[in-house]
Image 1: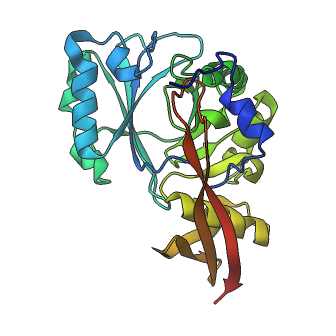
Image 2: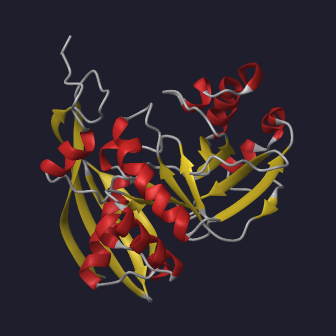
Length: 300
């Protein structure tokens, strides 16, 4: 067995090897967020102090429905007076939506219509207007998430107290501090307090902050990368200005077709696997990193 250095930090290693962050967002459309002040173990739902094996049961039901369950908490650990806050989010690339409720009994989580959520249909909860800024601070899962995420969560909570939550593992620990913006499914990485406030301000104006934008979770990773590449090519940061209309992948090459203000643009991206590396602080083995490169951008 390989001996690991306990002082190793995956986020610092990712920066040192100049790893691009575009095209690295987890591919997820359906999210269920459940308020829980913690502590969170390595597996948040399994190890959280939920009653009667509820975490395991919820994980099983959510997985069957194609829903990503996450735990959330306010940075100051305050709780809702009437129970636990729950959000259901569907990160459709052009029609995202968010619903919410407060449950007095956590067992009611198993009564939620997660099958509908996974299919992109309403769960029947109340529509929730606005966005959520979810910062990964899941230190038991990866040290970088706590060390780099907590200052980001604190800064956002001061500027956007209603929108800001800490969240359990969302993927891509080596890009900490990580921010998930819902219901849009925007992933931002390598944030510090200043750049996090910039990203939040851009979002409030209907813009994307491309320097820290990992991708839109409603798209596959090569398509995420293609969108960022096209936006940089055109200098286009408005959220709704670039819309995917078609996409296909053959032999590791993805062709993504976008509509930009009525003009059709095609981006061709090759994805290959790079060398095997230690990708997280606690990893016991090495894994390859997908690498994306633009083969061409042209207007059809």
